[in-house]
Length: 514
Image (cartoon, rainbow, N blue to C red; front, side):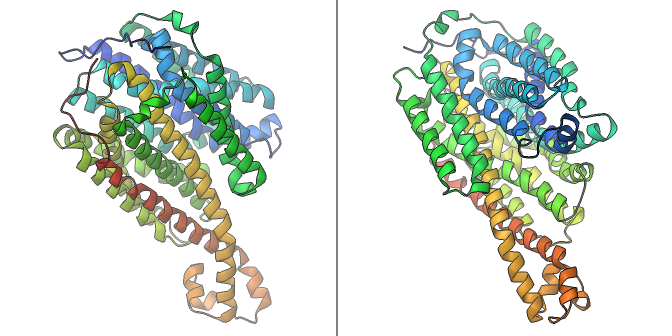
């Protein structure tokens, strides 16, 4: 099957009308809700578990089911946009997301909640790449695309920043049902604004008859196997039979889907050097952002013993910094070449991540402030030029598929980043704790520093009761050192994206157009 040309209107020569900006704002709000829904729920899982009587071994599926459905949906955005048009795919996605949110709030047990989370995750997965497609199909190259990219990028990062504090506040002052019901009014407003303001385009419903449904099923099964394998890897071990079988199954299924003559997802676009290296950089960026966003609350919860509301207030610094510095990033992206600008962004982000790799058990808000500020300042500089480099040169007929692959790479990077973080933290923490305990028993002065206590409070080597009294402190110190190693690992992953900026294809002043 030859891919039909995309029928969305090309960016106008004149500035986009205000109506189009309202439509794009509605899409961006939908994306914000989809990203927010992951983090806003995670801090309140115990409340949901207690209310619905869900077993502890099943509770993680409330998040995993959403993420699996989201990852499956993201690469399908291109074909669905060609079939239904940008306006109606967005309407279906935001409408389904809103209805699924109501279903989640009304769930009376584990099964109904998981079914609604799958629907919610699938619709949310469509909302994310739709926004990045709209940037290049609704706005002309230059300042308009830079502003739209900045707005989308800021919202994509602000959502995880506001999620923990928002979830903690809602659960504390209202109930867990409102974690989902908060989506209803914004969802209805976004649906109405999108239908009214987004430009129309011809639908190609005939493509449904020629759709390779087998390829669709194979891709869905492959991505689901990959996500489940990554979820199980930290607990069962990366070389366990279960994990290896799941990863092998994912590789076989996705390989079969790629080799299909008429694949639903245009993996063949990765033959484009610029897009391929852009997706690789997006993968590394996702691993760093998701990984860092995961290990910081782990430290604050398990070492510093903060509650969800306190954790949210601390991690809010990153999001607020990015919000304040985004206009500067837009101006720089408008006037400076994208390659060195993106390289500076990744280098600065790597430094900000590395700054957190030297924490001790007493580290708290004050010590975490400046690393967060540095990360917040450089996040937009990673996203804006990288998105322009990766997608800005694609023909309009391929932007939807390319956006799906680009966003899929970031989410898969995030899934692997979290799995790596868990592996490092929970495999290395016991080793560090044993070493610290040996230092205490030998009377080494370094033990007091690692435990974060005055030397006089460290028990003598022959004080058995004293040793028992500090075992929690020893465990905290071991966990802190393991988390530091995870921070430094993500700093190296971030820095690894810098050379990719120069491996992309030639930069043109204006994107290619069909």
